[in-house]
Amino acid sequence: MITAVVFLVAAYLIGTFPTAQLVGAWIGKDPTKEGSRNPGASNVWRLGGRRAGIAVAIVDGLKGAAPALVALAVSGRPLAHAVWVAAVVGHVWPVWRRFRGGKGVATAGGGGLAISPLVGLACAALFLSVVKIGRVAALGSLSIALAYPIVSAAVGRPAWEVGVGALVAAILVIRHQSNIRRMIHHSESGP
Image 1 (cartoon, rainbow, N blue to C red):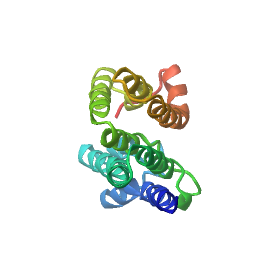
Image 2: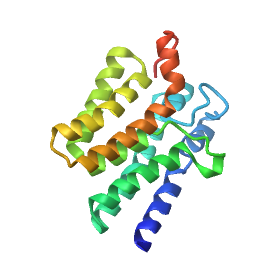
Image 3: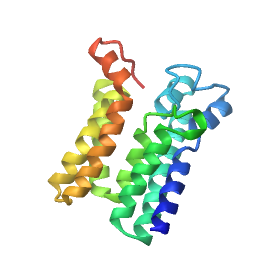
C-alpha cells in the first residue's frame, strides 16, 4: 500500500513538470500567456515552431511513459494504470499552477504507449492521420482519446483496463471542451 501511494504521488508530481513553460522560456515565449494560453505541445508549436512543439510533446510523453514503465516493472499492470492516470492528472491539474495545466494528450499518449504498445501505436498512427487530413491537432487528440478504450477492448484487454483507458479519455475530452466548441463553430485552428 505504501509503495502504491509513493508511486501515485511521484507520478502526479512528474506530471506537473512544466515542460511547455521551460521550452517557452528557451524560445522567448510564455505559452501560459500567449497563443491559446495552454501549456502544451500544440500551443508551443504555434508559438515557436516545429522543433519546440516536438520537444514539448516528447518530454510530456515521457512524463506519462516513465512512471508507468517503472510501476509496470515493479508491481504490474494495475499500479501502472493507476500511475498513468496520476501522471495525466498532474499534467492537467498541477498544484503549482493553481490546477491550471495542459490538456494531457502527450502525457496520456506516452503512458498509454508504455502500458499497451500495440494500442498506443495504433492511436499514434490515428493521431498523425487525422491531423494530416484535418489539419487540427485537437481533432486528432479527441480521436485518439475516444479510440484508445475501443482499441483496447478490440485487442482483448481486460474490462478494467478498458475502463481506465475510458477514464483517461474522459479527462482529455473534458480538457478539450473549448476546442470542441470552436470545432462546432468552425473556428479551431491547426497545429
